[in-house]
Length: 195
Image (tube, rainbow, N blue to C red; front, side, top):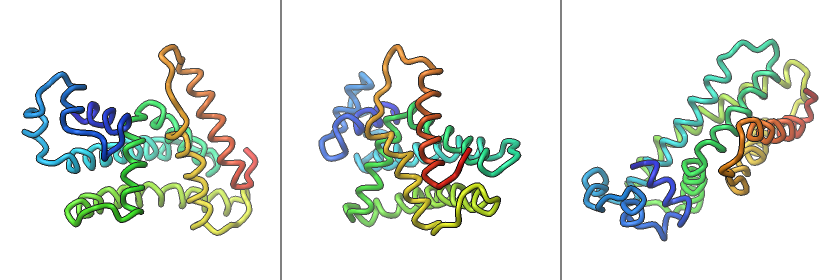
């Protein structure tokens, strides 16, 4: 159900997507959706939360590996991040839509309550990158910079992938890895780091 909803929200956006659209993708009745979700917003934010959980799990896994240098750890994390975007694009597009809704103040009190759980995940995620970038700087692999600004710009470089990337049916894993490597290299060099 979440997969179908993610696809519907990615395709039409939150405002234009209906429960009927999700049901059509599932080849089910809208009653099946309403059995689990009373409101479209509840379904949307569950998709958003699932997307953040995917991100966090992938990057925590990459970060927990054995890395000789912080810059190697950061590279593994960026590759994991980009891979999740490419492999689960509908969820990642919904996460971007959810963030835009939050920043624009277009959420109700009930939605903000659910969103607060998502923001905790996002903060954990961002802190993992912030701490690793701080290590990269302290090891001398990148110049000292304002972490608050640098982390936002770093995520901007990575997350823009959700806007332009479209998977091809015949795209190989090697081709996707090449895309992830290019984006990772670009983002890390943006820190002023050499790899």
